[in-house]
Length: 374
Image 1: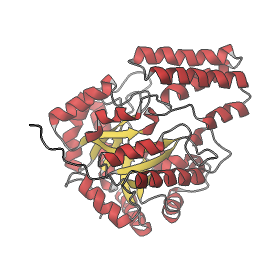
Image 2: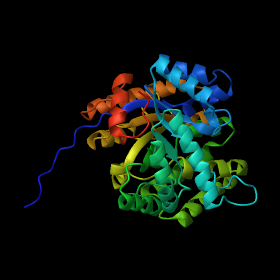
Image 3: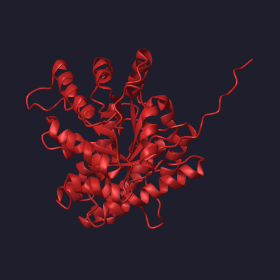
Image 4: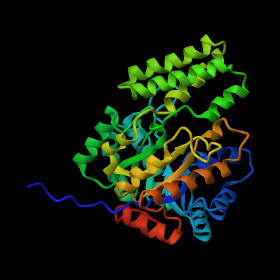
């Protein structure tokens, strides 16, 4: 006799944003850090707030107590909830060699400590951390009360061998301090029209643009690359398109975007690691005239999370700022968050937009000893 199926309570993701979405405005000095945080709160992009340490915080990871106190007072004042600090595993930071394992652990430990001091219960880490590195960092994360959520980002995907090896180590260790960040860029359905428009504005021919789309669609039908060799072959094909159509200067740019931003894995692939997903990057690239995201299946991804009881945060992560200088990133993020809220309702769930409710829910979502600012 089979065991009874226990229904999963519909998920209620916490609405949020990463300041990375507004990098162009930040770099252009339209806003400083305080101004940007205040705008996120005032315009309703929160309550969840994510920062990238090295791009948002001067001197990171060297943060003094005065700054930590100022930051905590600010987010409390404006009613935001720190969700994730994105930290970097820069193993190639030296010109002449890769970091040793001891250096890497020390480098990551200092960033994890800062995440805790700033009130973040999650630190997003990167794929260059191996299962052994994650195991070595686990007691450090636990000591500081910070969950390490390794980002599954194109050209990786949930069922990629490297991700499955991490998942299996997590299962073996059984620690609530090890998990994943789900990045929607691993599961796109098309090459972003806004990037095609950017190439057009740089003088690319319509024939080249059509060839990019055709090549991407072919790989989408084939599915994600099985290994790094196949990924490299695809990258080379995209570089070749630029040369074939008289724009060799665009080839590497096309290859990086086509393979590193627009992953072709199916939405259901995320089920391979769903129990370990602790944070979500709601990666997207633009909003079309019909009010929908043309290259990211936002509605399907939100439904998957709601159906599987996800109650962590979704940080809207607008990546189109890299090339789209003619539209407001703030309006674009607002449009994507509207899609998320509608998709959650349609799936029988909701998006949490109240700061107090988000704070309580995040505290329950993370291990009891995790740092959640109260």
